[in-house]
Image (cartoon, rainbow, N blue to C red; front, side, top):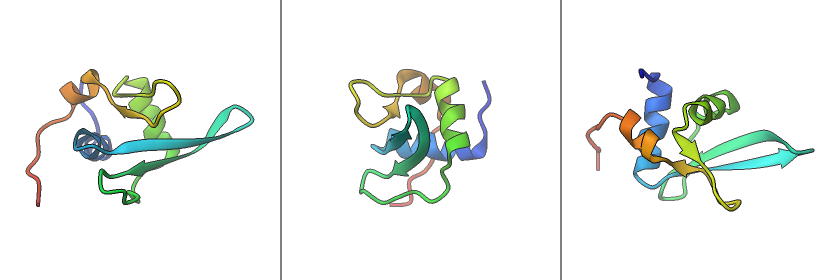
Length: 84
């Protein structure tokens, strides 16, 4: 399965230890924010991208905790060089 460049960036960030936190109003998800492992807010993330990743089962949440990458997500992500 092929994934977009934006999805690839988010999955790579999450594979390094990032997380996605959501906020709900009236039971519906109204905002999703992606944080790096260092706690920085990633600016290129929106609700549409969150729904795409969730539909592909690349991310999941358990027990009310933030969304993390799944085994399926690790398979989808391609390795990239880290600029550190």
